[in-house]
Image (cartoon, rainbow, N blue to C red; front, top):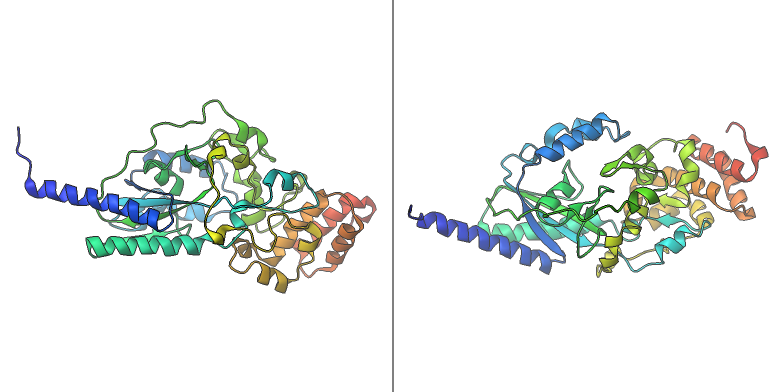
Length: 366
């Protein structure tokens, strides 16, 4: 039997201990779980290329421009050997989501966006974790990412043992469901990689496919973003396709139906992070009130929020569609009429469409 190299054995022990410390430090910083993944994403790269080839990314052209950076971590950050990936629960104490969706005079905002923007909070915590690693391991090549670069975060988290990718394409954790954010640290340290999730646990369940309002989940693990309400209300810059508008319902920023219906989310826990709790009554706001927000009010009420990124114009577009799907009230009709003279053609067109749903005689060019 070959003798073990003492230096190599000591080195292996050092990296194992550091990996254990990283996970403990991450939990102390408020992450519910931390794992370490290798960088081989060959199968996921093929899946991504097929998805792009089918045009499922819609107008998110940057996904094609990034090329292999998304699926080859060492291309994005040269020298990367491992990815430290962390999850943080965000399910907030708020008005019952299904109750809001069943109340068409109210607006539904995706639960992740009810509080402050998660990007800054996660980035600060991950940077603190990266700094702790540097203190212990010495200077090394590393970089923190939170939705800030082309990263296949769900595939990396799966490979790090944090869960499996469900049929709705979100990561699911057996003990926590799917209401969590992910962030990554790319590093050139040769840390021991964790074993990936052993198996998927969706089985024959197709609840997420069946509940999707626009049938955007065209097959298990295949989401056509062009039909997804999250894409339509957040990523899409132009008009929402008219045939899809009635299906949007009262969802004015994002959509959670596929997660709300998922049986694994019965294990989700309320977030202890105050920044993720609902602000400005956005867990069940009145549609007419939101539609009357001036640009100044929009900027003030969405300060520090993920909602701010779509801007006032698209906010009004989204709320106009929801008002078109809401029951007719004099207040709603009056609010829509006010926007027929809005400076934005996008707002005018959606307001006119919504108004025509309540008063068909008022259709015409705007």
